[in-house]
Image 1 (spheres, rainbow, N blue to C red):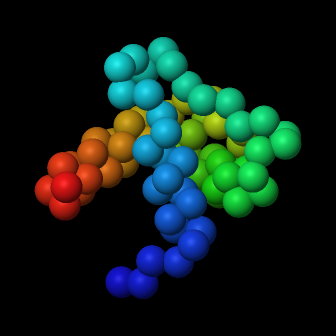
Image 2 (image 1 turned 180 degrees about the horizontal axis):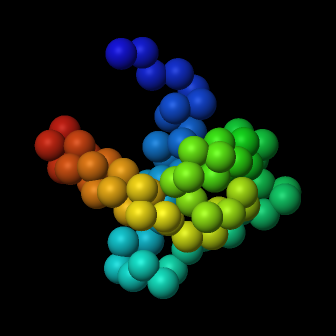
Length: 76
């Protein structure tokens, strides 16, 4: 499995979402890094987040962030 820069940008963005509450999301501002903006748009198109500029995790996003946390713990 190859990990390209787009995939890493999406994982990095997912890792920024708060874990303490499903009522908390993130906002990607228009002057943010273009790679971050593009990652948010891709995650939105994949149904992982509910807005192209961040927003909240969808059910799929919540599942993915749980798996991301497990991988992080295993490799830490």
